[in-house]
Length: 395
Ligand SMILES: *Cc1c(COP(=O)(O)O)cnc(C)c1O
Image (cartoon, rainbow, N blue to C red; front, side, top):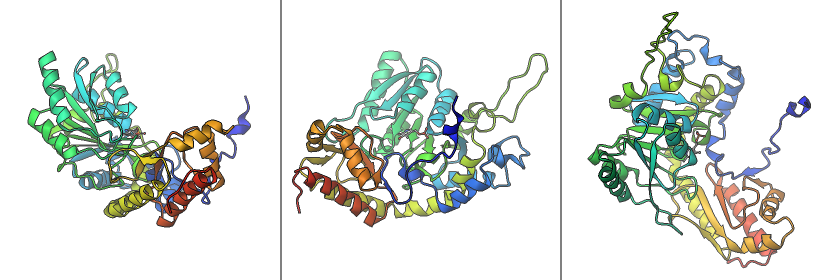
């Protein structure tokens, strides 16, 4: 066993690089979070003054207040911190559904939505999207599936899941409409905001959401792993149900511990501290969402000046996560001995990282939080690479 490889761990990307990695932009730590990371890096560091047996009730540091403030920020009633958005989804399904029940998901859902359903032994029914090139989810598809399921099984699905912003095309789904439909049918509504809450305004009540799941490391400038699970008063006791078991020999019980949170919460030190330390900046940054959308639209406009480059998904772009079809690049990559890695290497030469190595037919990029000059720089790099390889670029 060679233990030396664990020494001096580095990522190989310094501040001189522009990182456009699709999943990494919203999780870049704030300066405040970096400081908190050092202060609270030790294991159970937020548990010094735990008197109520749960992290969300600790007053020093102010996790208890923070839980309430996050609920207010999302316009929900109650919040807990989870091991990630995926754990939040698992927890909701675990507490609300029975094995054999049906869950309805959008066909652009993240794999963790499918696996949360699978782990809870639920049947999965998808609401289709309209395919190339828009990949839109029609909210009415939820009503159609609810009716079909009721006819087939004699009861409505026990939960409906919508991906607010999907990870493939960065489309923003009409959550309010889906929420209205769920309400009309009385189907509980889980909104997956991994790519929305923390970077753009999200109002749970306005969208008729029963359960809102978010990702701290994807969109709230926090260290991994941490997720957010918010719910309403109506569902709070059910989802955050407390333990009732007893040791048959010792008689021990754990009546303050919440079952789906593994007792207290699976997150204690750095993840909670960084999420908290970044929160003031997160509250502020969602107010400037319009600037992020403008930057994204600017970037799309520049890249579409390259022959054969087309933004996939809904237009005009409403979110900084985007997907481009780039067939001419693919033809070049086919001939290049670096194959699909050609684009990755050409960008890296220009100090741009984050493109999936090996992709050239299609690629995803995220401009969230980049300065306008950085976005301009990345767009120019793509144009240079195109010109150098004989692809036409509109002036
Ligand atoms: C990234 C992502 C997730 C996973 O989030 P974790 O916090 O890492 O569990 C879930 N759903 C969607 C739509 C995502 O994009």
